[in-house]
Length: 575
Ligand SMILES: Nc1ncnc2c1ncn2[C@@H]1O[C@H](COP(=O)(O)OP(=O)(O)OP(=O)(O)O)[C@@H](O)[C@H]1O
Ligand SMILES: CC(=O)C(=O)O
Ligand SMILES: [K+]
Ligand SMILES: [Mg+2]
Image 1 (cartoon, protein in one colour):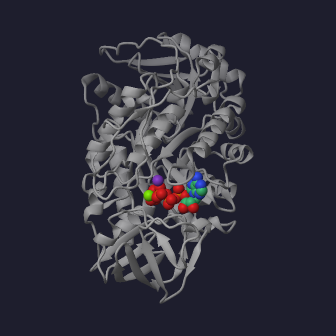
Image 2 (tube, rainbow, N blue to C red; image 1 turned 135 degrees about the vertical axis):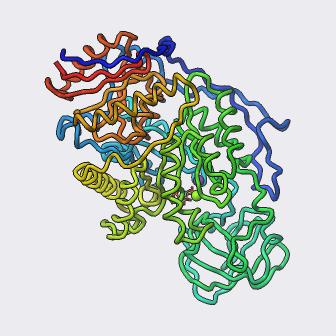
């Protein structure tokens, strides 16, 4: 093997022992479901109204993180079947770097549809707790896990909390309701017995009638439909339609006074409601990989949730993604991103809280901050909105997707397009082909080196890892290597490499299926599960032989290898 090795005379990191992955059902607490409270009377899980119930016997082998499959595969190497096919067909350089998240809904919850999305490049399946029942979500999660086991995908699952947003009710079973110019509709917190009275919609926030004033403007879904408040009668608020359109079930509501978003007591609502805590317990029990927190206002809530999760699952990781979609989240942006394991630019609600023309610059800022702080970032909402109804995107949508790829966001997300649209697979394939095309253009123009990265390390040892990754990425670009290999137990070194956005793909070898799924959200990483030792020489030889057997690399390919056990950079040709 022609190996050139740069070794840094630095203390090597303590090597973590390979702990077998066993999954115990976490203790699950249950407490009564409350309505969205008027003020911050959040029924917190630590409060005394908890009613413990027996822990569910979920987390069997079908969640894909059981010890069994790992033992069986100990001598082999696991890689996503879709990536493997892509590598064999098109070679290293052409693998997609931008990751894709699909919201699962009625259009995509069947096994066949989920499989089609996985084959089409879905890296993460998102379930939105605003909709559906726990049974429905459980089915989806288990189907994804089963597909991973049976078909060799590595699709991660992200649960998105409802949060304390103000939204409409269910429209009494109708899928939509049309409003006309000048019509008077009633928004009410009263609990109606079905069917709803004509031109009436429910509102989930008890303080609604008290917070709004006559003359306020009421925006549905950030302005898709607009009303003016004309009268308040007890719990009922009568509003005249000024901008007609379609009302959709559970659409978001904001109200504006003299051109500004009204933030009265509704601004005091807890970020994580009592219903969200129930959903979070459900997510922990079902072993989701990511929890995305809606309407984050401060770093505190993220820290709180992270310690809540840490106390309940000791043997695996659930990453917390902060959704940037409120005015408050923008005020505390850096702190929030720092506290989180990743962020989402949730442009849907963001566009209802700040003027639309400010959304692009905010997106740019969030993507940049995440890159600097080494946190994955997802750009979400309306990327291909027209594809909910039509099989081809608009030129403007393609330009929007291109811009997110050009900014080198880690991931792009489909919402309604995949949840309830008519062309979920087509929408995914547009994201895929636009990503590939823009990434190629970017590489051809050799634009990879532009961003100057700040230091993120908090210890000297981390600082060494960071310098190694920065140097390795630069070497990879200058030497035009075929791939970077990184052996990482926690995934940290892989994320540091991804942050450099190098020109070649990054093969990230990790010992755990859970870390492997987590890495699936990060730009340019091709996560493999492989049990490896502290002996890099033997790891490399084994990897080369396993990958060669499967036709994923060839003799002569130029590779740079790093590991978080041995802080070194090796440059070599595959023997
Ligand atoms: N589990 C589900 N069941 C039924 N419909 C769903 C489900 N998930 C999503 N949808 C539909 O797809 C649409 C888009 O989904 P998505 O979750 O991305 O949007 P959203 O409601 O705008 O997100 P958020 O509430 O997080 O701001 C929803 O408005 C809803 O109509
Ligand atoms: C995704 C989401 O929550 C939003 O865009 O509002
Ligand atoms: K949500
Ligand atoms: Mg939202």
